[in-house]
Image (tube, rainbow, N blue to C red; front, side, top):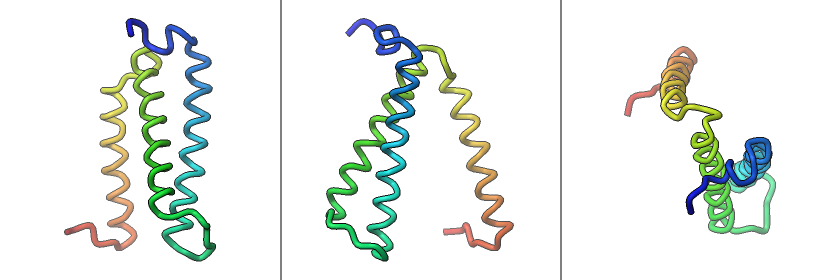
Length: 102
């Protein structure tokens, strides 16, 4: 494989694929939360739901990797932004009185 996907299908199609995969991941996450709470039963097993969830995570990661190669975003910049947001999330939990220590 010499070309990355964005070179073959184009960046707009790659962005559309990412949006589709994000939607599928969202639905899968909701199904997993539903199963975990067991408030609204689903006939799928936990294993089936987890397998689908992992597949959707992989699809989103693949799209992000291809978008990084196309130059539409910078993976290093995204990593720094994610670290900033993680720190902010912890601070909000502390402010809400949550114990963040192990």
